[in-house]
Length: 291
Image (tube, rainbow, N blue to C red; front, top):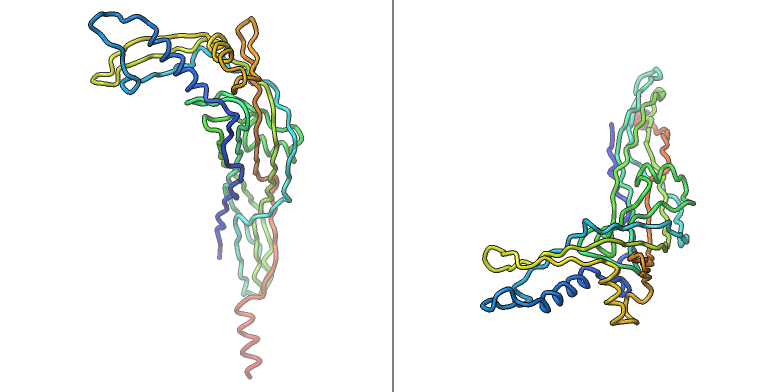
């Protein structure tokens, strides 16, 4: 008799949002709209669109985002947990020992959850990359689950799932008149880190304004240097979310970001063997007792 034990990892609890994460898409769209309103009309008969009639699409292809090396602080390491992925029972009711083959191939799901507590977000992938913490338990197993880097998505909290395959092919001895149980188990670790790093942005943002009425007529294209636009926004609000953002003369923006990383992944597999009394043997003993 064989049993397939489905295993899903517990969901990490790093939910929530941060008021220190700036939405740069909104900042740039506000700048684009202001630029549009200041631009003279192309025709005396035309009128400026209302904001409800316009769609602003930002294109970040010309912006290079570079993530520097993060600094990690270990917050919590949970005790490793053992999970049974698969088991197989061999009921040998014969008078001879038997050799059995135990084969199994199962998948587990590793999770990496990131949450920004300070920094920036935008309406597409943020573009922030994290190297794995250097002091992980069984780092090779973590790399097998997540690769060398973690990518922060567009939301302040993002969970990446990765499937990892575990397999076993071994021979076991099923003794006479006993039930031999073979189990494929995996050991899983869980850890929580805080990280901080600098992210550099350089390049030009392209914005396309369209009239949402009718056939989405192209109205205007605006482009702006990232550093120039953010410096202008920062100068207008020195105590705002850009107060810690550095902008140098080479038009490079250095943005400090920080957050939390929660990792769960399997670190080892084991085949466990134990024996139970055969049901047929138990029935024979019971009948003997009744006599």
